[in-house]
Image (cartoon, rainbow, N blue to C red; front, side):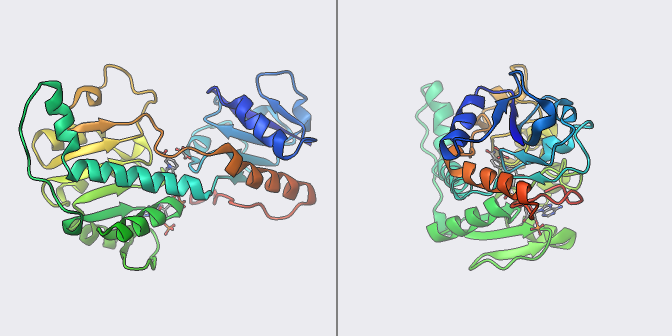
Length: 309
Ligand code: NDP
Ligand code: OXD
């Protein structure tokens, strides 16, 4: 039994070392080095090259090194019956919550506007808003969305959330399903997307949805680029239906330099780094699952292949 790490960024060695620090006898390989394919039982992956999972005949677990797994379902050659696990980690959730709080404060205190004005040396004070007067709507009340909702509530925002099945969260108004979407949107002055990307949620941030928000609402997409219809966002910003947007995720990453988001004055961009798996914090759950594979017990944080999250 052995683990292969497959990812196309520069973090293979960091993950390998973190695994070995925790469990020095582990057999762990980078997919870039020579390795015995038939020995591999676990692939620890993040945005792997399409097709690369197909070369392991004895694979028993595909472990996503992040929370999202949409990229695995996008690979037509990924084995169809191997369990997929994902990361559930307190830092991943709290880092996301802090990122969203920072974006909301920047918006209601006009930092986004002043950043643009500073570039052209404009002195134009603008009325700011108070936390107590703002309702934030969170789409997706899972690991990240529910903590973000509860944290924003503690800071003093009115918070509401929307999910597939009804949730009960302290002092957060919750809505669910298709019928819950309209009333949820109608009072969400700031809308945060923390949904998984699935066939049901793809393109959900579109013009029909924007029209159901209060006029001048602000959009935060920290989930996946595929949730957003880019040209609908630009149109809604240009005709003042929406006041602005913060984006961390894009259809193509890195975002091509020719994309209109880069130079749009109402868009604030971050490079898909709202919340990143902390290797030391995440490695124990990977090793725990590796040990579970050896004794054949149920894996932690397993993804439902039907729901795709
Ligand atoms: P979870 O799987 O824990 O939660 C998903 C939530 O979305 C659940 O509440 C679920 O509802 C809801 N949901 C799913 N489908 C629908 C639907 N069709 N209609 C309404 N609600 C729906 O996910 P996480 O919170 O762990 O992560 C969310 C996403 O955040 C990830 O998939 C990833 O894409 C993104 N992410 C982005 C990061 C970044 O740095 N930008 C970092 C980490 C994650 P229910 O519970 O009722 O099923
Ligand atoms: C994740 C991500 O899904 O980083 O963990 O986007």
